[in-house]
Length: 145
Image 1 (cartoon, rainbow, N blue to C red):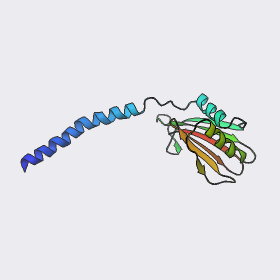
Image 2 (image 1 turned 120 degrees about the vertical axis):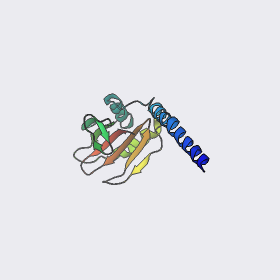
Image 3 (image 1 turned 180 degrees about the horizontal axis):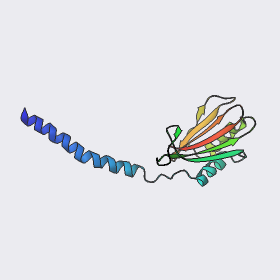
């Protein structure tokens, strides 16, 4: 019995000693190659997906995560927000986004229900891009995933 307990303890100790550095290395390596969302990249994505639309407002925030803004010393992803169609939502943007995303090679679009008309969401290259509509505004949001 004591021999088995020693064997189990050695296996667990080995898993901890080799697993922890392995997890750290994989976590570091998994983050390599992704490009963080910048102001220039966000405006380029908006121009690519909605080239005929003119933005009525734009916001760019760093340190956004889990649906809330983080403290200045915390790290989080960036989020860019573009507003269109003020004082009312522009439902034609949904068709424009769907057609441009398909022609530019974006992955499959997912319908986003709600508001006066349906919007669309897609993910590519570490970004989540969502177009939603409310009664007073259409909003395109790009967030790092």
